[in-house]
Amino acid sequence: MTKVIKFTGIDCANCAQKLENKLNKIDGVEANISFVAGKMILDIDSLDKLIKVEQVCKKMEPEIELFYE
Image 1 (cartoon, helix red, strand yellow):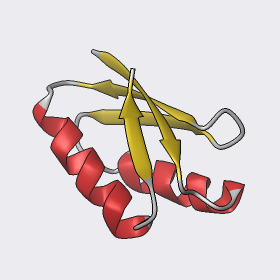
Image 2 (cartoon, one colour):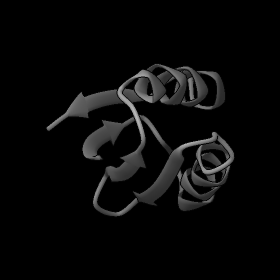
Image 3 (cartoon, rainbow, N blue to C red):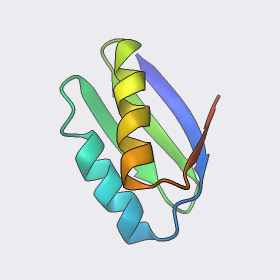
Image 4 (cartoon, helix red, strand yellow):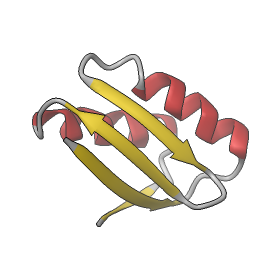
């Protein structure tokens, strides 16, 4: 399933790229982050993966705020 999440709190495109790379290492998650648009598109195999995605986001970028569409 595909989830679109808007975000704030990432300071630079490099940080967004690092976060995207880390999220793509989660089994069952394919992430595409657009720093300019302020959103990430996730292809996930189950809703349980969203919890792991949130944990990774908060660990790497403590100031991030996620807004589900």
